[in-house]
Length: 521
Ligand code: SGN
Ligand code: CA
Image 1 (cartoon, protein in one colour):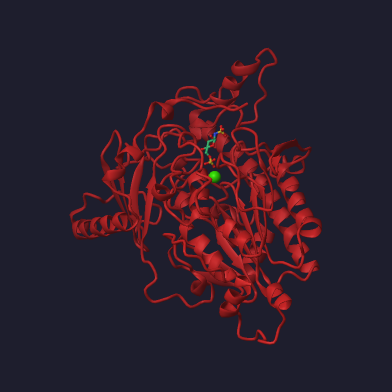
Image 2: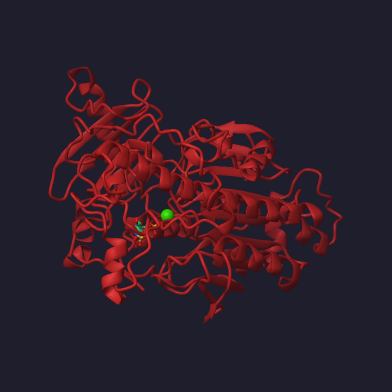
């Protein structure tokens, strides 16, 4: 009963008071949350960019045309598990406790998460695809998540954990995950109740294995190179300049080289995974270093974009299903990623940095009842704001407080005057994978200020109005001394606000575990 009372206070103006409880409950909005893994803005044609005409994403673009595209949705800790934990809890890593992927342990399943709240409030709830939080999902009537390779999942013939039991499926993961989701929508849920569905693709995460039909899609095309492909990391030698995520670190597996039959087990894995170390570049014999860089990038970007194409196709299947079943109007559908990704930008792949390409998350919302078609938003929003927003949209009240804020008003095209003008960032995982120095910082509409710590002590400042590609670290430019002072003050304030301070130093410690490579067969 509570759910109906709560609903009444959030109902739209044309809802009739005379409606029966059943009708009212049917009008509670459905939510489909689609999150692809490592999908980035540069790969989505609705956002523009260099691949727009060669590798368009028509279904994602359709969502943008019919909904709102967000330019400044930012990730508070740009890596998979931690971002997912922040999305589910509405809290920063230092509060929800899940701050690193590999060695941060499991997500504490006793924490509050928004799906549990939806389930308690009369929603049918489900999860399909990538979970990657170690502990068993809570708050879902039905779940089926990737449960191989340390929950990263496999592209082909993946093992899923279906409601507590492992099942090996046959086929391509993006298609399979969508099949399960559509089957639940059509055959398994109680259609008289509203639903919340989390549809979380493994693609386009490493090792970027396309569906066979897309393997040779761009064989004869030379993909364009991002403008920062040849970044020389001047003024950023110890940070951006000291990683293991440049295109020189692509492995033999990334380049789809077949291992010799004579190699087995660990030896074979080592050959495939760790082929690329400095001085051990994976490239055809006799090729120059510069041509080798391009060759590696071409192989990677084609596979990556082909994986995105399957995500886009499958999103199209979901949109079709909604259309055919009269669910389009009353369903809020969100398309996002767990963070951004470098597609050769700054010479990188992977994510982790506070720099724009990994910090910004693609985020598009279609909800015809509330959101103006074809609108674009530039407000600063972060992944801790998702949970309170979904709760707000569904009209669910709770006593539990989260750090994020609902941006329902933003969706309505009516951003509050006191909306946040800065976001706080903190990345912890080091040195594996990819050797990105731990750092925290602040990101405003104009500036990015970051402090890289642990075994270095480096500050960086970027004026993104003048330097949108963040190539010039101006931390020591006297013209900016006031800006630095002001931003440092603001940063301090945000750390205090979010409870992230020196008392958590232990939490930020790098332990022996962080130096071990974890390979799951
Ligand atoms: C794996 C990848 C890394 C990637 C992490 C985290 N290596 O370890 O390249 O950064 O996942 O990704 S792989 O050789 O096993 O593919 S995340 O999306 O889960 O955060
Ligand atoms: Ca990810």
